[in-house]
Structures are given as C-alpha cells and as structure tokens.
Length: 278
Image (cartoon, rainbow, N blue to C red; front, top):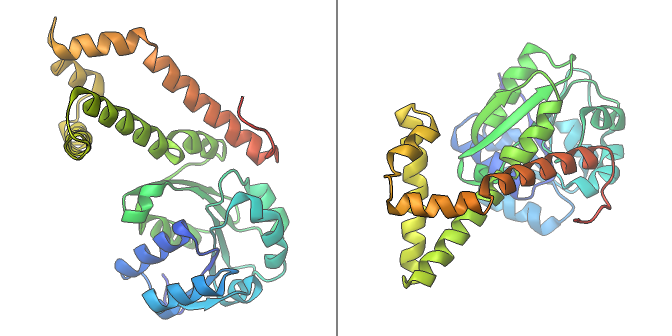
C-alpha cells in the first residue's frame, strides 16, 4: 500500500508528530518515507534527530515529494498554507487534512485538488489512543481510503462516515471530548483534596477509577445506565452524590456544552473565527 510512497506532513506540531510516531512504531512506513515541513528549522532538526525522517521548511517541496500529503496545521494558518499547495499536488495524490473546522470544499478549492479526506482526531493520539472520524470526496479512491485508514489507525481507532456533517458532530463529542474528561477529573481530584486526601493520592484514585470504569464498560457489553444502577444502592452514598449532581443539572450542562461546541465548529467552518465566548 505504501511501497515506494512518501507521506508528507505540512505542519509538524504535536498532532503531526503523533502521526509520525504512530506510523513508524507500527512499521507502516520507514523513516525515509516521511517528509515533514515546518517553518521552524529548529523543529525540523528536532524531528530529524528523533525519528531520522526527511525535513524541510518549504511546503511546496514537501507537497511535491509526497503521494499522501497530511495537512496538520492550526486553522488560523490555513489561508497562508493552502496557496503553497495549489498546483503542487498531482491528480493521483491524496490530501488528508486534520485541520479543525476546515470544510472539504475550502480545502479542495484552496489547493485545486479533488481527492481530499477530512479527519477529526483527538489528543490521546499522542499516546496511540486517539479516535478519528473521517470522510472524503467522491474522488477519493478505494486505495486512498485504505491509505487514510492506515494513517489514521496508526495512532488509535478510526471511523469512516459518509457525510461531512458528522465531522462537526465529532469535533464536539470526541475532538473536544478530552477537555471534558480532564475537567471532570480535575473536579474529582479537587473534591478528593477537599475531603483530606493528598493531591497525589487523589489523582491516583481518580485516574484508576476512570481507566477501570472505561475498561469495565467496554468489556461488560452493558448499557452504561445499567452499570451506573449496579453501583447505586438505594439510600447509599452513590445515590446521594448522583442526586445532587442531577439536581444541579449536570446532564443539561454537558449536553448544552457539547451543542455549543458543535455550533462553534460550524461557525469556524464558515469562517467566523473572530467570535468570542458568550
């Protein structure tokens, strides 16, 4: 699938490096099959020393070198980078974007390229535990899809959807999801410290509870509501805690927050990047 092919990364930040690390650790490609482009020479030197890959500060050169071109830049730099790629992608090449809020049409029009995959990963990709939701244009061939699956699957799980609308939904649920999980963990840890635990012990209790609960939910095959009921004895401690959480509107707050993230993702895709929080 990747024999005699080069994967070029336009942007070599945190997520770009996570993808590079995943591709190499799973031996999907060899180091000399990866080209990373970044405006900072120091960053390129760092990645070359760490992974023995090829590097450049020239986006055009990277695009021309790769048959799979991964766009892994921040959304605000997109207007400056897309012109660099225009005219430097061959018809048979695949453009794979993980740029948050960047719709396929903007990517295709900006690069004058038809075979485009848009994906939404999340930050646990940095340890190979991410999940990516992705879709592509009609010009994305079956071979392109296999390539996209391999690249995105190198740092976690991947799910293909047939409508781009799902990407904004995924941005709100799984893309931003780690932020919600970290906030919940932070609140639980702070509550544990308030009770009298040291922060170290509170963190260990919360982290293992979260990890164990996720693994248990996956392996049990039961609905999470059933699992919650199992640990909620009538008149017990869990029931008391959940009563106050529900009374405080926890479900509603979470639902509204995710809806706000979804709406914001749509706004970013429409170019409304200057709107501040309400």
